[in-house]
Length: 371
Image 1 (spheres, one colour):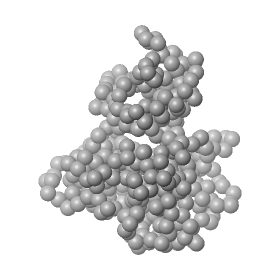
Image 2: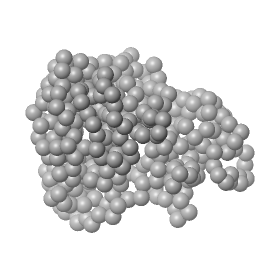
Image 3: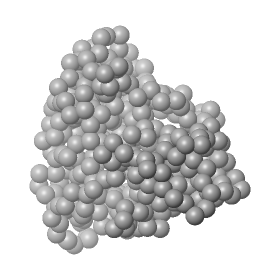
Image 4: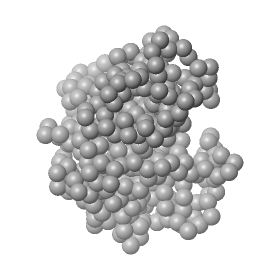
């Protein structure tokens, strides 16, 4: 089974984002920007809270700092009877793809919901995004070849009681009490204040970056919150494929992002995929072909372009944005079936004052994997 799915954006006819779906109960829609929610009973799905970008690493006693793992963001539900259900940020069920996580109920108390990331690691114990994508494409058949682990970093529900309105530092403390780490589940440590040290450790280890979370922050499902800040060691973002140039099977990918209700082009990618990914891209784009340019107004190109409906999302790494809003030196970084096209927006980093510190600090131990 390939890790692909049709979109169920979870919206009511009025366009409200359904951030939480309780089991067998009437749902109160949670509109964008609305923090209140009406919940009863154990939830069926919860759309994960997201971070915004910060311009530079920083130090602050108001924040807890974590490693940003290059994995698949997932929410794990362990119901009161110990049954496990797992879905990604788009609410796609992935439980059957990851049978080694089906017994997490033995290590997590019943009635709990955990937020975290599923990772696959390379021979040096670092998360390998390409390896994870291969595993997801293989599904349960890849269990022995490419095992995965779940890194839990937040507790949304504890023994049948919601925890999302509790401050982060309290949720983290309770998380350690409900999870017995080992095997295929771990609770990575966080560090107080020293975000610069941890960022430099991530650079040294070749990890994706750091997430800074305000210690008093509550959990807001389905929202991108300014109380969570991500600082990437390598710049990467999600983009919508809007077409491609001729080639065998295609030349360069044309990509765009959403801003102010408009789809804006930001350049082209001509490399970074292997043969398997190339075939997957070609197959996905063939299903989205259109004669109509998805951009308004339609730009002028000096070479032929085959347009696609703006539904396919990819991740790309790049060096920087140019003054004319084009990606400099972009390279393909993988398909993103768990990301909705509307989430492909340009993240304009928040400026945070930072101070460099010595590199010989305990924060370096946070970048080392226990499995």
